[in-house]
Image 1 (cartoon, rainbow, N blue to C red):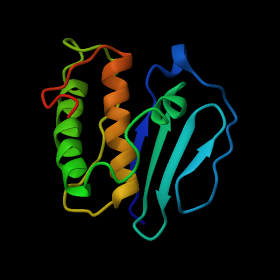
Image 2 (image 1 turned 60 degrees about the vertical axis):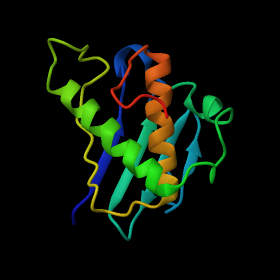
Image 3 (image 1 turned 60 degrees about the horizontal axis):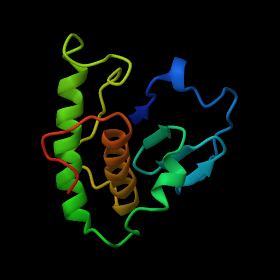
Length: 139
């Protein structure tokens, strides 16, 4: 069974939001205590975990779902993932505490609106919080 796991564990040692968080088995997005957000779909065999203190409360202040079209979000996510992964592969140039693991985002897979919306917003949050500027920028 193939699983596409997008795991954001930024600064786990420093910014850890706790241990022992229980994951929901739901196939829709779930907000779990300590600002861990899980988006999963058992039919497509993928899962995204966003483990980032403050992300959930920050997300509330962003444009609502439906504000951006899915094709725009997919395009931005392709650029963001490419930039992020290139930084993972350049540990001398970028901090390995921020860029520890590559993100496996396949542009040929339709992850749906919710996944693309949350992934896009995570990248915006990541850039703002850690003062990182990606080539494609915010919008």
